[in-house]
Image: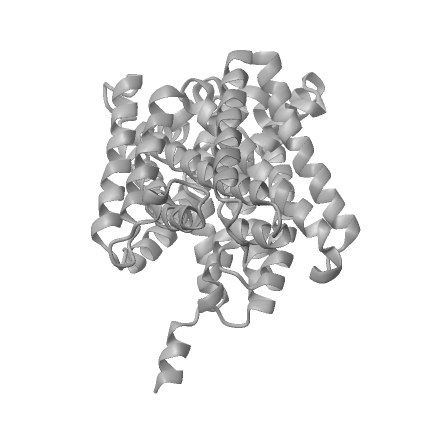
Length: 439
């Protein structure tokens, strides 16, 4: 009987792919779409594909480290166990990954609010948008605090429903768009002549945040069937499906919505375009898809990030108060994440949040690749692929900083200051806890 129950609790490949897709398709694509079109026009699908390739390189080290360590702590645990004598490294990776999750929660909430009010008179009111974003974070924080068991089945329903809605809407837009395939290809050629490869690579790097979430599969290590086969299959399949979904969404928008409208309505361009072609039904369907996408991602990210924060705090690398739990629920960490996500929304704009999130996950993934390179013989990793991962992820981070420096140096300065603060905080706690042995 106990064996039967254990088997029923095991997660197979379809469930693991759903976990990864639920984390990835959560709002990043809505935000990336408008910003990408404003920078590189019809070449946006190419940048999305390149961003997916970069994320696949990042996933390579996660897969190898996941199979070697078999630790559901994933990113933080991998780095801590690879560098057991470096308390600063463990502390830094903990701080970076935590605040990376905080930035994605802020991004999802900002996108949620943008779509929620996109068809109202308040669509362009930045402070109403930010207030709703803060409010929705508060709602899902309360849900996580009071519902220990979470909303697993509802989460699954939201994931599959949002994917179905977004795919249908995108295909309908492509079929009813004013542009045909030949016109679109000609526009791509014209854009390619006017733009540099660097511009495309910058946008590809910015899209990396839209692929963040594949590592959630590793958090299910203790509940999955056949990790050796299912971890790589689930992660790579989910990334491939995310690329496919993102490209279809981008093509649907570019075929049917004038570029100037996508740029003007960056945060809710897809809803505006669907409304012009399909009327209120199209607008409402896209809004529903976006709200479902961001809601499931906000709730799931708060759930996972709060537990990670609690573990890091218990190890001594964050304030101890954040490690306190009521039962198994890390209430203090949930509140802390909600508050910090809200602060990031209030002090930063959409692009700032997007770029901070992209840089953070590029940096964290780079550190994972470096860790994997260090023990590549133990993880049975290809030296060439691991080096390509390091070069690709490092170049992506540099390109985003270059873009910030040449276009919005004040924003870049804010990001640098934020990283200095994170690094100093990590250093302070690593010194305070240098007597704690690593596991």
